[in-house]
Amino acid sequence: MRAWRRVTALARKDLLLEWRGRDALVPAASFGLAVLVVLGLVWGGSPEAAPPVLWLALLLASVLAMGRSAEREDEEGTLEVLVLYPGSREDLFWGRWLALCVLLLALGAGLWAAQVLLFNAPTRNSTTLLLVGLLVAVGLSAVGTLLAALLQHVRAGRLLLPLLFLPTTVPVLLAGVRLTEAATSGTPAGPWWGVLAAFDLLFLLVGPGLFEVAVEG
Amino acid sequence: MVRAFVVGGTAALVALGLLLGLWASPPDAYQGDYVRIMYVHVPAALASYAAAAVACGAGALYLQRRQPLFDAWARAGAELAALFSGLTLLTGMIWGKPVWGVWWAWDARLVTTAVLFLLYVGCLLVRGLADDPERGRRLSAVVAVVAFLDVPLVHYSVVWFRTLHQGPSISLQGVKVAPEFLVPLVVNALAYLALLGLLLAERARLARLEWER
Image (cartoon, rainbow over the protein chains, first blue to last red):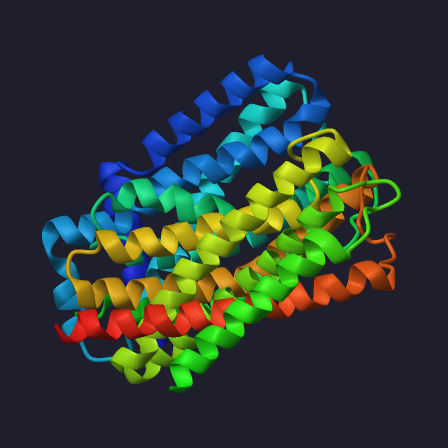
């Protein structure tokens, strides 16, 4: 089977299981909504507060979502079988990464809509925002796929995930906030497209190789 | 023989650094005696970056070759990166309170050092909490590599986040260092790097003994 077929088959498997069980998206989206409400309450629901709150909520909610695929495979013991199939193990990374990208995009879209309603945030330049969301999802999924696989066989791994994930993704959070502000209020975007692209590129380059090391044995 | 020479030389260099920093250096016109904290703070920061680089390099080599030697150095590097970045944060705060008036400022360097500290603490936790020691070695090497590659990005994004929004209230960039401060600083930096090298070698030796046991 060619590599892209393996990748899409794996992503399809993850998304299908998610669609049937909805055990990652629903808890993560509910948690993200809770973060939006609590932060809005504390900071006051002005439109200026919306971009940081949106991306912070997505970042925190994605921590819940990203461990699920690895966990499912652990529960069912499917990883061993997947590793035994012919072909590169990097495809396992790309499959999970693709599924997580789709999941995070859906999560981001939901939180964005909630944030528009709750914070009365402007909806200008939504195509630019979609592009920002796409780049953020790509970067977060790359880090998330790698870290989730890494922490699968570590005691208290679920607790360590945010400790490693949140500091690592600081550039994504900051870039997301600034680019959203730029899109909705017309301030200059500065170097942030570059920061986001560099982050995505870095983790897409090192992610697959390090993932292989994490899932072996 | 060589080891005694290295230990003696490092001790002498650290003592010389202390002497220069505590007595030879004049108090600063604005900061007074607080400037002496700089002689510990800046070298500790340098040592933490150097230790992180060692952890990353040795970790990458371990992932490639799987030899105990590289793991020992990666382990030593990660522990010392956490130690020296923690020291950097601590001394920075002690200096910041009297000079800046605050314990903490959201300056890019502070945030970067805090991120470095957190990631290397995570690296040590992953090693300690892994199911079996071999997995711990592998996974902590992965974290060390990821952390080292990510830290420059964090640094620049924090610089831009603060400056584009509301210029940084305090920046060290404008400070010119006069020779009477520069000499103790350089001597202390060399002393800390020598100390780092010694601690790395000793920790790596200990790690290899543990491995053989």
